[in-house]
Amino acid sequence: MDEPTSGVPRPISVIIADDHSVVRDGIRTVLEREDGEFRVVAEAADVPSTISAVREHRPDLLTLDLTMPGGSSLGALPACFMAHPDLAVAILTMREDPEYARQALRAGARSYVLKEAEPAELLQAFRLAVAGGNYLHPRLGALLAAGEQRDSDDVALSDREREVVRLIANGYTNPQIAEQLHVAERTVKTYRARAIEKLGFSSRAEITAYVRRVGLAD
Picture 1 (tube, rainbow, N blue to C red):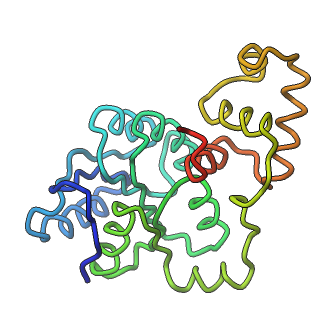
Picture 2 (picture 1 turned 60 degrees about the vertical axis):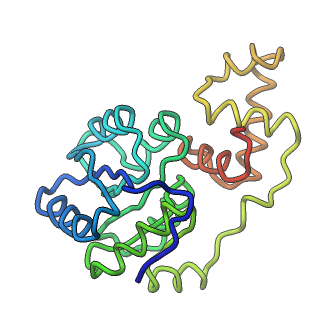
């Protein structure tokens, strides 16, 4: 089940992040069967080492377990994307819950696949992520479609709200944003609150993913 990976040089460099060595070994085995299409450049067993590995290797693809020691996997994505903006992320998890899938996609992951998946499905999810597409396990896709969240990409933010959101995604604090925009900190808080209310989310991971999707990072 080959998926297009046009524009991506071979081999596709991969970091495998999972706190279970048997899972990492399984993913590596699946990838190594594909005639040099993929090259595993590092493995990580916790959140801090995942961020460090992304910074060091700047891979094409990160396969990421949703739950690992050392912090929040999704919470680590802003740091990963700042280190390597073109990183593709595929979540590989046992959590068959549409809310987790929604949070992962909002945080910038491109694929969300269950650990029960067959190798062909894993490869489909990985290839689509690297090609800039999305993959969601069919059962989860059906559940999400039944209760679809509003499309935050179509939300109309003011110019100031967009600028504040962009700076939040880049790691700026409220005082730093106020200095950048030459306004009072309370004004920044007002713009921030308005933007968060319109978007429907507040975590930095979700804001960073939104900024990347709509092109505010450029």
